[in-house]
Image 1 (cartoon, rainbow, N blue to C red):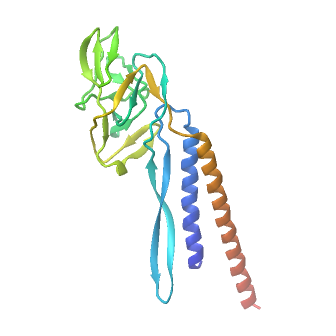
Image 2: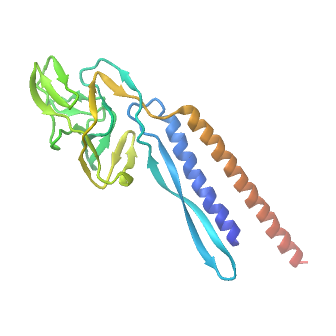
Image 3: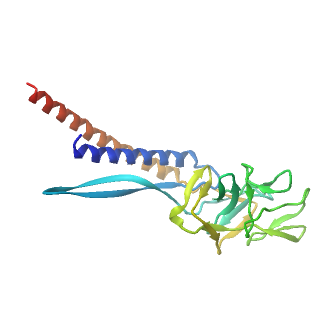
Length: 236
């Protein structure tokens, strides 16, 4: 395969990865706390002596869109949404991770957990406990959790120390190289944050990527036909 074929194949590989990301965004358009992702393409340029330089595009970086999603009122005492910056910090078997999905509930032992059973951590990175049969549970905008007017803990708001290290793990969970407290976000009780995916925009992106992929495939087909014709001509 000549250089043009490798250039086209690297482009096709990146477009396939981008299509997978778009499909995942569309599938999670109604998932609470979901953050859409995008693809960043890198360009590699290599000198080719007297010939023009060789440029190869490669889709190798997934970027998380931090745009705020809409807030949906549920009225649930343990449903929380973040307005502004920040994530909830949760403890998983893979280590501490971040999420914007605030559908929580007290576990059998009183530990505040996510729908997947992962512990929600406070502003100091410790487990949050809710007394059994607690009534009148309130959460202030700074995350202070109170029962019958008595403050018990403060749900932490965190962010990735390096935003570029934020990596989508599964569902609405993200990992990063490190986390740190963040100021400025407000916590809303009785609300959950909707997905920040715009289905119409994603469908339009999918069509554009599909057309670009078809153009690349047509180019590869023509290159294949050209190579076959050259081999047949030389073999006569």
